[in-house]
Length: 239
Image (cartoon, rainbow, N blue to C red; front, side, top):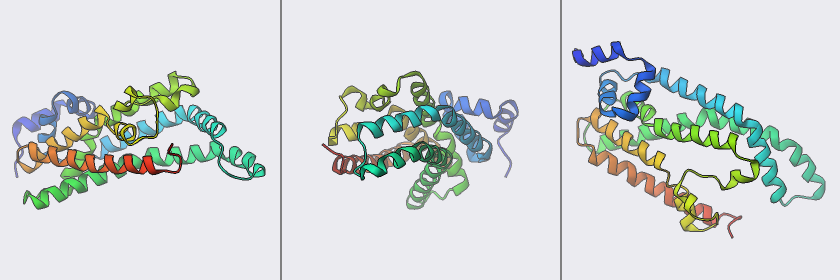
């Protein structure tokens, strides 16, 4: 199948960096290119590498935060075990942080692409999984932007302030263990932005109106957000 000459010309003029920017100011054109040529590996590896570098840079602060929270709320273990647990904590934070920094984006991309594939199957708009995975990767960029801002705040603020920092709507309430607060903690404008991009990108790939996929993605997010809010409220540490 011959490619659209305009798309080919845009690809010649644009590199990965330009694609990164067009996810913010010209997403439809970007997703049209991805529908024709769903290349995502370079962007996925770049985002993973940047995320890993940011995490390594912020790791001393994250370890200090873990120790601060440990001292504020020590676990219910015998006194002789406390020092051993405290000594192991920085290593556990490092291992867990690096593992999550590398794996978390890929898990999100896999789940989003799977959700879009299910929508395509039920709407009889058969679309290759590879194309939907490309949509998941590039639609993730607002969430990635939010993570960069979060890392900047981690590096800039004192350790004592970090537990109270959030980019979600929960920032407008005092920190508390309530259903409302835990739900608002899931309400991030960066997440909503990505939901819109995932819906738009899948609509372009399926050659359908964006309203259906966008509402579908927001519906899935709402179910997950409510579930996490309930679990957070019922957790042992809830007040």
